[in-house]
Length: 487
Ligand code: PA5
Image (cartoon, rainbow, N blue to C red):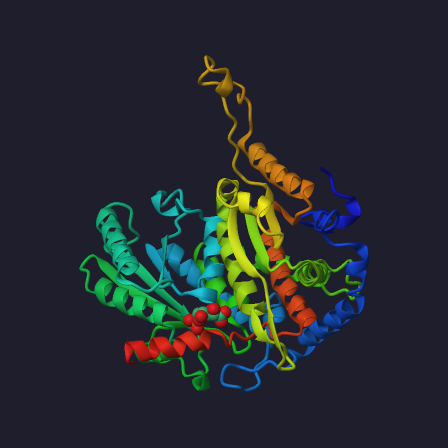
């Protein structure tokens, strides 16, 4: 199966969006998409106005006051922006401090204060990071994530793991006499239950450990009127802080302090990450919506929903390291577009249910449903061309032809073949899919991808006329949980 070259849109040689299999038998027609032209042009104008004014139609904070929307400014470091030269320099200082004198870092946050950080960690460190030696980690600290679920067990397990690590490494490969631990609670509101309870628990227990020196850097909204309990605590204790600016919502904050704090600690090239985002932003500014990758993506998904009932989007990255990208996108899509009412107050119940999947793993779990279940899904594939690792099979079992036939097989080619096969099988049955391809696993390409996805959602919010920047639906359970806890 090959798709027509004109149904692939590229940004340089680093990013491609191949959408040929959104069209064809049982799927979109040229006429359906062309009919969206007036809406697409209006969406382009609305996002251009958002870039210029920092305001989105009818958007209010959860307290009902006017609130700016500034995520489009994050790639541009400037005095007036949410990311200033000073804020980026302070993040780099933190990275240098960790390299010099911190043995372990625990990031504590949930939702938008966690998922982007996990994307960066999974892509550039990998799940096996904490089993590497100090030298193999390039002098960077051990990394842990916590505060992303309630319950005793995750906190207890994390505590146990850190204590065991401190015990094991004291006298071995530490940067000082004792295990120097940095706790980084990340919470824009500063009052999120998961984050605050995990932070309080770990701070109390770990500060009492004789082998551990604990310090804290808090990432939160520092404005007095934001009334972040975390900000007040940090001021009281004199901890280092990073500000989350008004107008930068959690799920749009990976290019701001919540995400960049992880980028700095693990030694990512922040400039390359933001440069990727800037290049994608530039490519997604054109009013010519068929040449604007994010606007076109939004139009295709919107049309698949309106004209073909696609109310599920499966985000399927090929390679385990892309699982976190899928989980980050789940929040971005669900919270941004899952809306009861449009911006005129009419009930629309808009949105697609997002599902994160990993290829090839979930071909053995979910693909049966994608291939034969209800025709209500878009399968969105993601692949990285250059995986940075090579493994080629030898011939350890020449006596068994069923195994010996794989001699010489490059395992990256096997992964690519799996994606190709999945897509072709879906195509043969008239099922919707598309592929995002990154040329390399590096900061620049990740910047391109994440910016593309955020802009796609922003454009689709305009097409559907829903506020992509609020999340009123989460207030319902928050009230009940407060009542249940009696606090
Ligand atoms: O996108 C959002 O705004 C939310 O999902 C938040 O990121 C999440 O609830 C965590 O909030 P906070 O950063 O205030 O702790």
